[in-house]
Image (cartoon, rainbow, N blue to C red):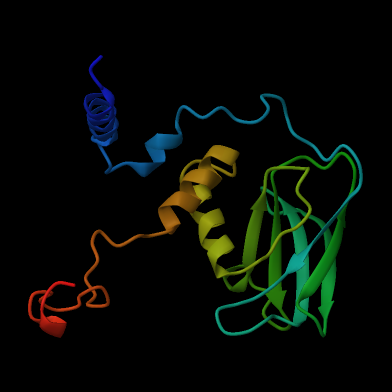
Length: 183
């Protein structure tokens, strides 16, 4: 009986490699086939408390407010940040998704200064608001709106990985000369 493990493993590896080749130029298209979680309009079925933290690039935001709005910007409810970057905001039952949680520093209530996170799932209750979530929400909107698919694509596009390792951290010199050669 002939062992076929090496040939089979090589074949599977080749198929996986070739399947991975293709148009990597359009990462948003990876998610085009993903179905949305529900086809009907999503709502908060019951009153729901959302909690989290607010941080900007430099430090926690401890003075200001968090405002829940609908997609068009209409205020649903708001709460204040009083000496802490932690917030808790209660969303009324029947509120349609998606909603945005927008955080404003005290005295900076303009639209341009807000940090935000887009919410498309009524089962999640923990949300952090920071520049990264703001960038993801803005990118999702530019992809066509605040949907699960667009938020996933925006998150994937916002995380970058270098094409190759251009650092010297892995280089240890010529292994034939270091410490007297190979060991």
